[in-house]
Every structure is written in C-alpha cells, then in structure tokens.
Image (cartoon, rainbow, N blue to C red):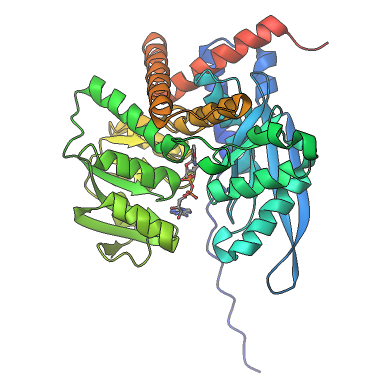
Length: 432
Ligand code: NAD
C-alpha cells in the first residue's frame, strides 16, 4: 500500500485587522485628552443601530442571488446620520462600524449638522452588469425602507459606488414615499448627478478638500508643492481628483495603483488623461504610458507626497518602512494601521489624518443637502469658496488643539470633534 504524503501545513494566516477596535482605541485616547465623561465615551464606543438586510436580486442569467446589505447608524446627536454606501467584496460589519463612527467625528470636526453612518453591500461591483447593478442598488434601498430618509439618514457614494448609484437610490426612494412627497425627499442621498439634484463640485470635493489640507500643511512647513512628486494608491473618485488637482499645482504623479495592479512613470503621468482612461475602462489596467510594478515597488517609489485613496489598513509596518515620502495625505479612511503609524512617526513622515483630510466630500454633501431643501442650485464658485473656508477653518482648529495638548494631528481631529459632542451631551443630557 502506498503511503499518503502528509498534507502541507497551511500557511499561517495574518491576524484579522480589527478596524473598529482601532477606531475605538483612537476614541479612548482622545476622550482622555478632552476629559470626556465616561458615560459619553461609552455611548460613542458603539453604534446606535446596526441594520442588516438580505434581499434577492434577479441576475441577467435569470438566476436569483441573495445579497447582504448593511447600514450602521453610529450617532445622531448632532443631526441626521450621514455617510457613504460601499460596494466591496471584502466589506464587513466591523468595517462599517468603524467607518460609521469616523463619520461622526468627521461631521463634528467640520461643524456640520450631521451625525455618522455608513453602509453598503458585500460584493464586487466589477463582476456584475450595469442592469444587475441597478437592480441590486434598487432592492438594497428598498429593503432599507424607512431606516433612511432626508431628515433621518442620508447616504452618499463611497468605494464601488458613484453618482449613478445615487441616482438609482434616489429614484427608488422617491417612488416608495408616495406622489406628493416625491420632490421633498431629494436630500435622502447626496453625491447625485447635478441634473438629478446634485451640486456642482461634489464629484471633486473629497480630492479638493485633501488638496486644501496639503496646501495648509505646506504653508506651515515652508514646502513648495510645485515640482514635487506624488504617488497615489486607489484611482477612483478621491485618488483621481486629488491627482488632477495636484497636477494643476505642478505636482507630478509618478506611481499609481488600484485593485488591478500598479504602474510607474518617472516622467509623470498625465493625471487628467489617466482619469479619463479609468472612467472609460474601469481601472488603470492596460494604460499604455506606464511600466507595471509590484505593490512592494510602489510603496518604495521615491516621491514627496503619498495619497492613499483605496482602502483601510494598506500601510502596515512593511509599507511604512518602505515609503520614501515626506507627507501622507489620507484620502482613504483608515489607510495606516496603528503599527504602521508608529513606524511613520519614528521615520519623521508626517500624516494628514483622514478625519480632516477627506472631509471635503461630506462637507460638499452638506451643501448639496441644503440646496435640495431650498430648491437652489449654487454656482461652482460658491461651493468652492465655502469648501476652502471650511477646510482652512477645520485645519486651524486641529493645529491649535495639537499645539495646546501636545498631541499628533489624528488625536487632535478626534479631540476637536469630541469637544463639540461632549458639549451637546452636557447641555441636553440623556433622555429621560
Ligand atoms: P472608488 O470606488 O471611486 O475608488 C476606489 C479605488 O480603490 C479604485 O481605484 C479601486 O480600484 C481601488 N482599490 C480597491 N481595492 C483595492 C486594493 N485592494 N488595492 C489597491 N487599490 C484598491 O472609491 P472612493 O470614493 O474614491 O473612495 C476611496 C477611499 O476614500 C475610501 O477609503 C473611502 O472611504 C474614502 N472616502 C471617499 C469619499 C468620497 O467622497 N467618495 C469621501 C471620504 C472618504
């Protein structure tokens, strides 16, 4: 009898990244800094509502597939829950809880009358047709029913969703509230196409806000952005708009990556053309003006600024050791792990934290919501001016807090955000 060779030992799995725990730890650190009463800290350490829906969708093949959708409502102490909808194959309840809490801090820091929420569906939008995507979105928003609303919980685009997704979501919601209420619910989602009730400036808003942050930092650091080099991970809404706006300031994009891989061009990509290519082809794959590189090489590229604009937990210790830049402007939410951040600090690489750096999106979403309520359409100039002032103001408040409390910018963002929430809880107290 032949002896069966022993099965190869399975490779040890890396420990699962607990994104929500990371965000809870930041909350705990900042709560100490602002001497937040324990009862408020414990309220904020969990979301108010965790909604999970399962819904069937007829696929183009005629088969039915059941999807799992989430909406996490973290806090509405400052206003309606507000936050994006993510479609991604690796999305999890833990991620949505973390992202929803971050929306609470972001809206508080930006002085917006919104709380925090986040949601989405665990699936890859790249693997379905446009018709399927429409039906999935419509069934998801229908399943959420009265758990969302323009004065209760307002959705927006995030990874894997865009203005078209929001148009389907709006249409579904409008058609489920009855004829007479139709026009009054436009604000149930933001990030809509301009022709369907969106605002000018929303598409580029997150990238634009990030550029304002970089310029504020550059002013203080006496750093001239002109002629500097940039690397960007994630070339969707946030990454591509940030790269185009930075290229208009003379910053050269030398390496870029997305879910399909990484490209390098020492002469600098034309960020605008690459953005157009991605809009037509869905990814950077096949773009002619760049050499394919590995993820490890991307992180080791010599540059000045890194914009992570893909997913959380992309910069661990290895990536942080490899990076050859002076500044990281966090377009993505939670791109640096706490361990990665320690390495970056030791190496003197500065971080502009997500809670501020990507808050331009929700800020302009707020402008969209106000315009919907007033049946107005502001000009791009008006939106741009307001956003610039809002970003500078928040940056100033963050920098002053950091100086006063001798803490890093991430804790300072949380600190400023928690001070506002503490004030409101202290005034209103807990019902009854
Ligand atoms: P998007 O779907 O438009 O783009 C996401 C990009 O990330 C794509 O280029 C995709 O290919 C890439 N990507 C996905 N998985 C990847 C992987 N494993 N490795 C490398 N690249 C990968 O999404 P977006 O709206 O630009 O969001 C990007 C980040 O910015 C997210 O963290 C999101 O939460 C954050 N954010 C977005 C907004 C907004 O207004 N859209 C606002 C604030 C924060």
